Image (tube, rainbow, N blue to C red; front, side):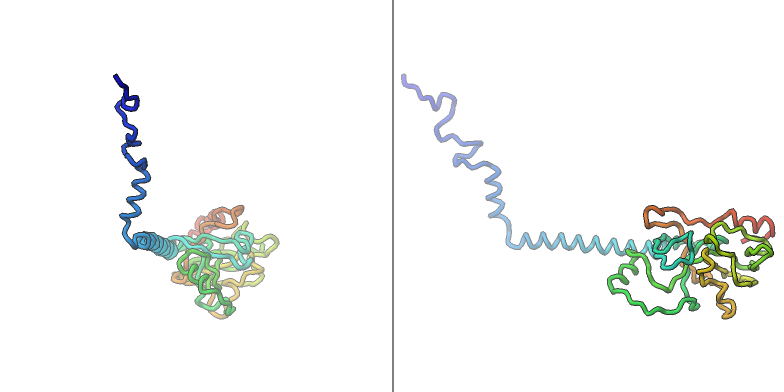
Length: 265
């Protein structure tokens, strides 16, 4: 009786490897078939789909950023030392834009407002179109000189004056203890007394000797900032990181006005 060793286990010399008699693995077969079955232009269509998704994502990001800037939160750049030491030169601050939509400012609030009365002379400085575009959609801090930032000292109905016998600013006859003043500064070197119209504000910088604020525009009749010119209330310093903190409204300083004079905001 002859034996056939190659068939003793049910195999033949040309038995398939993993099911194929030509020695081709399934993975290789799939790759080969895929390359044959792929239609011309598929790669181009795939690239076009990715590009379309990227463009849609960019547009959505820009729209969201614009809406946030317009209705919620906006970044501004501090170009001067008029609010030192509360705000430093080159600080970037977050401004609560929604404040201007749902309520009036209160005494002590630090606020950004549009310079519609010509407090600042035009510098004629130009920025690149790209920079202006980023500022417009809220992806870059606003560096235009058409906005100013000061602290609210008096609101509608208040009488603000300087100075009392101790050299302090008074609001409705109540002297202010101002811990936020720049070290060494007097409360004001300009004597004044004004009554703030309803819906407007009398505003001063914390660095009084370096701030061209409401005091300097009394003679021109442009000393008051209108409510419609308010952009928003400064909420926090967002850059640099080591100065990351909220911007205080100094409630303790201004709470005395209501207690001692009986006036309200």
